[in-house]
Image (tube, rainbow, N blue to C red; front, side):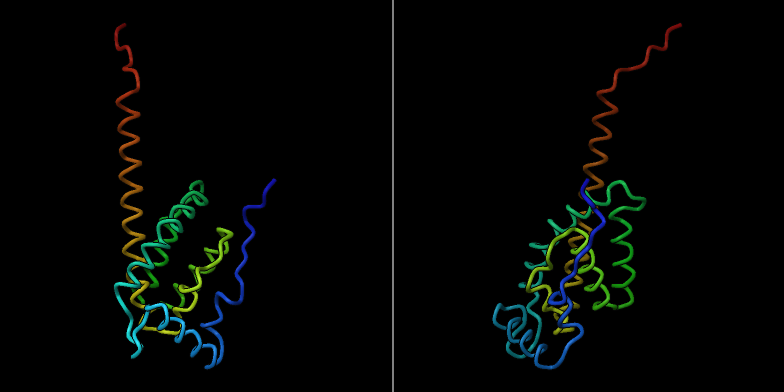
Length: 162
């Protein structure tokens, strides 16, 4: 039997949250190199939006499948992230997402793991990620509603005669 409750988060995935200035400078240089932030350290909204679009769909999809039998499921994860986002706890959101990646038995994407080195880029990314997550939930609800409607329409009508 496969253990589905094993979680693994590598230190490199939280390195930019908890380490020295050299590590932070290296992370900022890499973020600049890929275009996530400008040479002046400002976040590139278009890049971060694209990054969110690239990572959010597979993340949310697998998270939904893993949590489908749990009370609140993926909506519970969204609610917690929404609360943190409202409190402007972007680093806490990142750490929670890193834990969820570990729960999914996936590694946090490299660029995503560097974002805590740039609080402004992390803030922009989290806004984009929450919008993508909300869209995923809307689509999931619409698919569920459509499937329930199709099932109820295809069910044979009961015989009401006596």
